[in-house]
Image 1 (cartoon, rainbow, N blue to C red):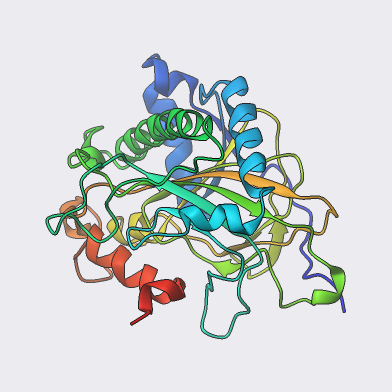
Image 2: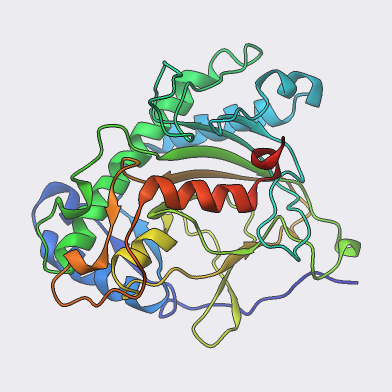
Length: 319
């Protein structure tokens, strides 16, 4: 038995886009053009010039490791809530009906909403913070806000690339459904086989994913010819990819591409993930973009995510 394999990639397949001029406003159109081109090809982009302090990234990774290195009995105190906040244990996520359960485990939090009542969407509610890691909450929320800022800037760039006003995708963000997660991938045994993954092949559910990899590697992306290619870490960059909702919102012009993780390094791997989504009642309708032909019926962001979460996470279907 062996690991699932992938081909080496080159700079032409997953481009690096420096978004400094978008962030500063010095030359947003040039950055928007580069983002637009990359999103129509593979939908995966390395982002440099993102502005997240390296010290914060290192602190977030350390807090994540501190959490995951605890016994499961400690992590159970913040086990995943009905609002998808807290610890998601190994094997609790399954990306397709015939796939094996993922090896990864996650700690998840989101836009802070302290109340928990029937007026909220099922994916909104209080975050859960482990008492055994008192520093985790502050670091995690700081990282969430920094990564969310990057997502906002990128969404402005995508809008400009489509010839829209820069706030087109950001008109409803008072209570976003965005989620952040620390994701832990254990070293994957070779004998587990080619059909076992840290996370199995899938496309991301929402609008946009902002990923900060560590130096371990393991991310693989399916190219337009159906070949799996490596997306190795590049110092100082984030990996950004189009999600299903942004692809739907742009009538398929922007590509949501299958990807997976195979941690064949023999080392543990930590990812810092931000899944950006607007408010639950945001209408995802490609007909609102001039020159775009809708391929699917309009749907609210909240309804779509609730449907996808029910398919992927077994805990949401318990009676």
